[in-house]
Amino acid sequence: MNVLTGSSQTSWHPVMTADTTTPSYWLNWRVLICTLWIISSISLTVFIILRYEGPRNSRSKRRETPEGKTCGGLLYEDELWKPCLRGVHPVWLLVYRLMAFLVLLIMLILNGAVDGGNIFFYYTQWTFASITIYFGLGSLLSIYGCYKHHNKVDGERIANLEEERDVEKGTSHTSGPPKFTNAITSAEESTCNGQDCEIAGLFGYVFQVIFQMNAGAVLLTDCVFWLIIVPFLTHKDYHLNLLLVSMHSVNVVFLLGEAALNCLRFPWFRIAYFFFWTTVYVIFQWLLHSASSTWWPYPFLDLSNPYAPLWYLSIALLHIPCYGVFVLIMKLKHFVFPRLFGQSYQYV
Image (cartoon, rainbow, N blue to C red):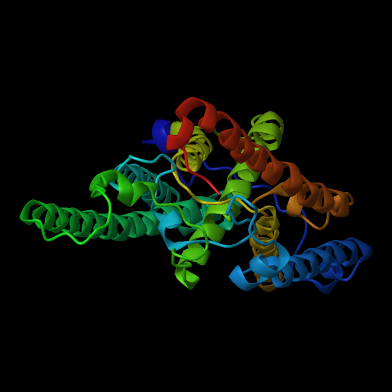
């Protein structure tokens, strides 16, 4: 088992450099500067959310384009469970989300069973649990979407049969030749123009926020793991194992697959939730260490380090490229997919 996952005895814990419960640890210039970074992050987050979040703000800031496409944070209900390709049944997105949820849940449970509750001291496990919750919620939404899709297709099929019988009996009152629609494709090919599609509720917006928050957080955790922890800490009793490596690889693979398959928008301003997620984690660590003197899960969070303000600022600035990379990935999807799939690709 140690070869697969490690154990609580072999897991790496940083050396404690100072007693975090003493006033001298917190009453100094380093903590003051880091506190200013935290306050600035929270203020910027609140400003962006209040300015851009929600369908009302989206409509006031960005009106519909001449092509009838809407931008910003507006979200329609069927975008939560609809694949990005017309003609692809929503059940395929459901299968993918269920598979991702089960794999991630098993890995999280296995990690917790081996290393105990201490794993949630780490930002990685916070993000891993969040993305697991995302795929669990996504599975429920996809089940609901498959149900709606089935009812819509059946309703259109019955309507077509009734119209066909009326035509055969000569009772149709249409002035021109009868028009027949494909019940299966019409259910998928109906596009939202802002008038005949239902806007998503609060639950739908929460789901989209979790998706975008995880997009940045997953890239941040993997960047920190592969670019900072592995190169600089593997020689300090930091034991790599199969589960640890997998958790910092599978998460981004599943998220990229989800981004390729789903029909969710990716407005830029949701980076605010990414900053908020990390800020909550840092505040949690500060409260924990002020109450109990314990090791820091990441050495760069240790406020006794004279370079702590620089580390905190660097990690904060790292949020921008991590989120920006995912924005570029989504733009690349919107550029490549129309050329690969033509009119069958649908996006807003």
